[in-house]
Image (cartoon, rainbow, N blue to C red; front, top):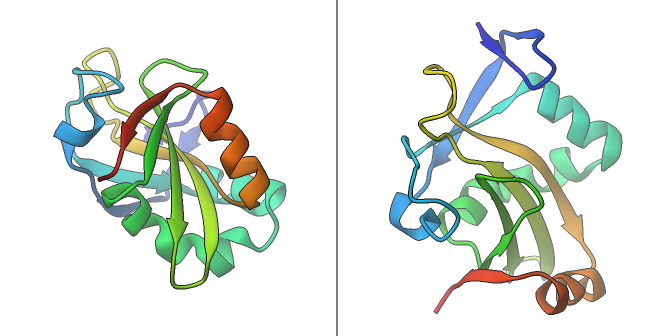
Length: 137
């Protein structure tokens, strides 16, 4: 059993893939695992807040995690704000990833907080207004 942010028990945790820890050190040097998961409660959050994005686009999550176009500074510590433009479908995505650090409980993993498709205008606004920590070559 794992606890989510509110402290309630979460039993359904799904592995998405792994990240390149070196790439994500622009957020924090204190990353303890490459494994990335999503909890059932976060899937429900995505479905409620961003209807159809999970069903239609979450298949791109692993690619976004492995090859983000940008990692931006997030509003919370140890959190990566990822942006990715997928050329296949000419859509842009935002993924918020909480990184597991030495301050977190032992059973925690890197965890997807939210995921959504964003319009090009918003994507470009993020690039203008947020601090860019990493840009793909």
